[in-house]
Amino acid sequence: MNIVHYDTTVIIMANIFKRVHDVVNANINELLDRIEDPERMIKQVIREMEDNINQCKEGVVDAVAWRITAASLKNGCKKRNWL
Image (cartoon, rainbow, N blue to C red):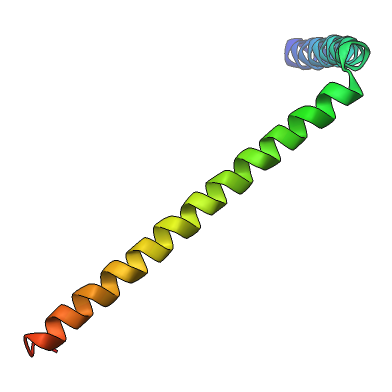
């Protein structure tokens, strides 16, 4: 009988904590919704996209540089009859 009572108490406490957690999350989300400025959020997304574009451009530049280096090394090896 004690075990059943303990299990019921644990379940009730877990439910209470879950409900409190849900209420806190709802309040935090509501607060964030109130302070969010759509124009600022769009500007931030644009900044992040521009950063991603710049990173992609740098990656392309690096890839082209490696390709040129590899071609140069290949030509050097051919001149020495290593290939």
